Length: 338
Image (tube, rainbow, N blue to C red; front, side, top):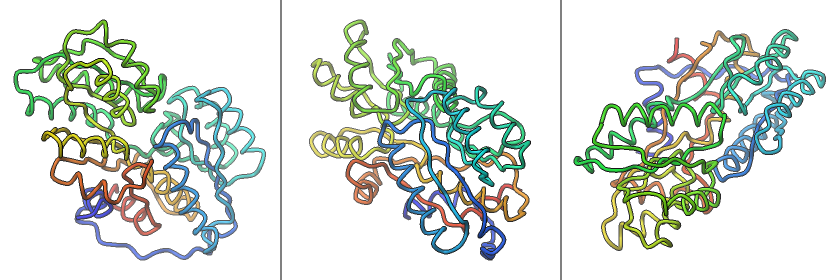
């Protein structure tokens, strides 16, 4: 079963496909994307998916515009100002990947008060007037430790690589990892660094902390950092632990090389970057008058030993294993949540 089918099957089990609604009601509407960061392969894939799917939607007359804007280096104050500018520009909906779950709430409330639909995804906001689309990030973190408990039942020391500090996703995955360690107390987190979900940042951070660490049996991660961790550990000539990967092509490629060479085993998990396209279509459906639950949860994308090759074959060089959503897909997710 392909990635798209697996994700949608788990999101919309037992849901009958709904007819695609007419574009006419939203053909004059303008949607903007407010994105807080673009400095890693996941964010680049997310923006590429947005451009591809929304570009086709504009051509088809679904909406009048779907303009993406990215702020510099995850600055909440700059993103809040960006959202305020979008209000002035007359956008009908704003899709947000937020630098902070709370720091943008004032700007988001201003948008809502101006009659603008706000849909947050991945890095969600807590302002009640906004919609939220996310995976169960805590479970994504906890499941890593559960996997390690089956592979390494005796336990051992773990290194945690976190993402962008202050972002909802980073806090939630880390909380899930620590819940997993409580559930499986044979493991202990002996070091933690921020890798910013980027291979180069993670490699430097891991290289910096390794000399102070005892032997580690596993590396729990958030995505984009597994290959960097592997490079740093190999350079330090330390035993290679089980590194949980994050669906990036460089990680999957390295994993396959190690698997072929010596049977290396691990797993890989992340939110699909194409969730931006689901957020776009959810915004379009809200503008079209559809009733949509405020919180939508989509499955995370997990890759295991037995489907590594199939997923690697469909992942673009330098990219991330992905799924993109159509309007019909979004309608199914919305209906399944009711």
